[in-house]
Image 1 (cartoon, rainbow, N blue to C red):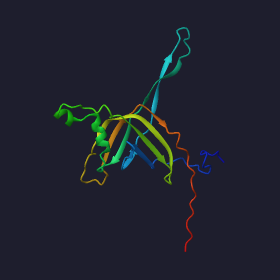
Image 2 (image 1 turned 135 degrees about the vertical axis):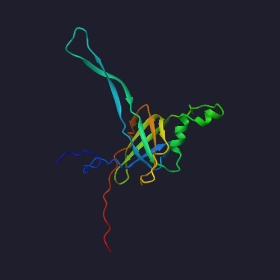
Image 3 (image 1 turned 60 degrees about the horizontal axis):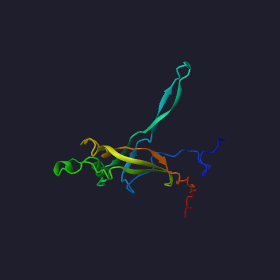
Image 4 (image 1 turned 180 degrees about the horizontal axis):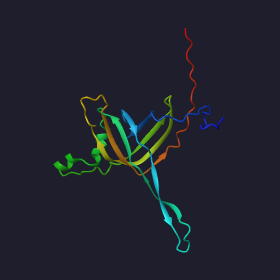
Length: 181
């Protein structure tokens, strides 16, 4: 029998599923958020070879970068994505009064991505730092012969993420079907 992969729930052998999650921006959950791209970071490899040592190339870590994160949500009347995207560049403001194109004070935001188990218990959370909207899609392609859900999208540049270590593995409860009467 394999060793348990969960400390608190030693009888659980299945990894968490990817369909139970929430995204929080400005302390509020994004409504109808249905997709989050991967959290990925890459570290450049710096190679060095001493002139007198022709046989070995030494490798060490260089700069680390974080890939952009894409959030998708069903189109609703929730203005969260549009309001944030307008903080980065607002044509209507710059064209009329010559006011600022960018909301320098608050166009960057920290967001939280939470993962839940099948019974709705929070199992993991990641804090993503200093995000800003580099792409915004207000509406998808519209098609009168399709039955697809309309999706709005933002692409977030960020300066890193870290796991929230205060979120611990919850104790998973057993469920007993009530006796038939």
